[in-house]
Length: 164
Image (cartoon, rainbow, N blue to C red; front, side):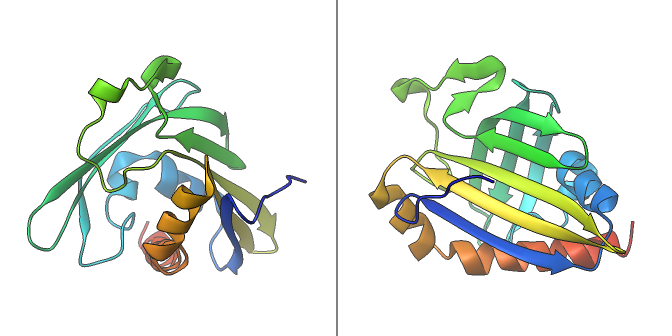
């Protein structure tokens, strides 16, 4: 069991009506991630996934007004159908993010995110956790609507799995 710090970490857990293999596929395949990853009417217009520790996790989110926000990161942990961890504090191949390398993004704080999946009957226990480096970043993420946004995205993911 992981220890979470309520001052630094945001997390939620839900039991969802979808098999973990489909949830995993939706998280790890660009064509399956793009339809649900951000709350509508936002969309994902680009996605690159190199599914391995050190591999790239890259998305470009687009606002309803057409603004584009890239998000670049590095996978830290890939345990098939069980656990996926990535960070935006590192670039692919665990390259530290230099201050001059920062680009416009949907967020200006660094985080590490983990999705955990566990089969429960015909459904899945889904746990999403995001760790932040300081209280200000955690508060900023919460104020941006972490629970609502990630919850809506999860609802969209579950609906999408019904079409896969």
